[in-house]
Length: 151
Image (cartoon, rainbow, N blue to C red; front, side, top):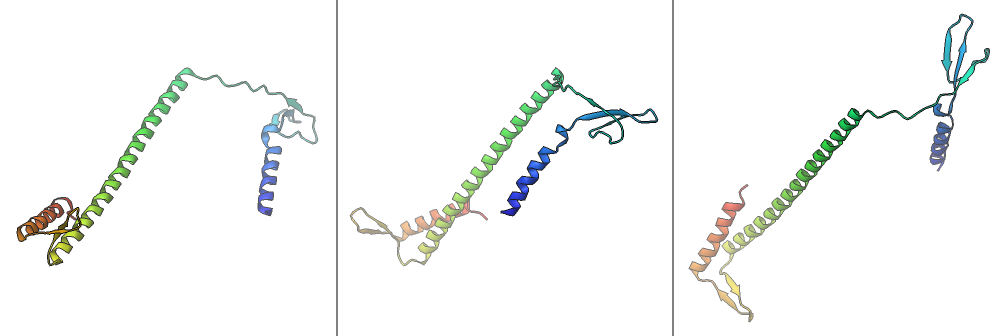
């Protein structure tokens, strides 16, 4: 709590005593040298200078250059965002592919261990695979793993 209080007090003091609020003083010393400062000298009289700060004129060529730079930065941002989106999509595709491969690998391992394979029917009964059907099913799984799941 005290840190926050000290922080806010220091911010207030910083802005209260910032040089933007200070005046500019001009004086001539005994040797005839002209001096400028943001503080009036104690031993000499100084003239406070009123500075009229007018907004700077914008150079059209500089403004055109800035606009081109902004446009270029916008193009770069767009391209970077597009690349990042493509990378995210690629990572998602790879993650989905890895999950599919893991699932097919489990099915293949389970089919190799199983005594027999079957396909469930809508009425709840099972159609047991013949040896040829089983070999074809395992070959399909093996082909999928070989073609799409190389490591």
